[in-house]
Length: 100
Image (cartoon, rainbow, N blue to C red):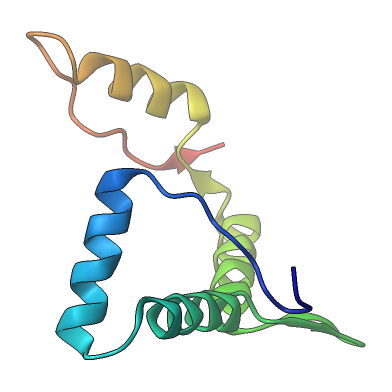
């Protein structure tokens, strides 16, 4: 395998969707894959001397600061109970944030 070359094994459904997207965009499957990966990586940001930077990181840090200030959140147990209820005849309403 050449430097910078990666081989991915996709299931048939994903392969078909990617080929359709590439055709719709008028690019090769390889070009589409590269675009998707570059876009995804750009969203994660980069590590510099100040720490992680990027739009997702900034958004997460703002949410963390808001939680630390207000202590409002939805406990995992509440989310799990709600998700389990979705497959029953009596699904619960989504849990609300509360002081934790």
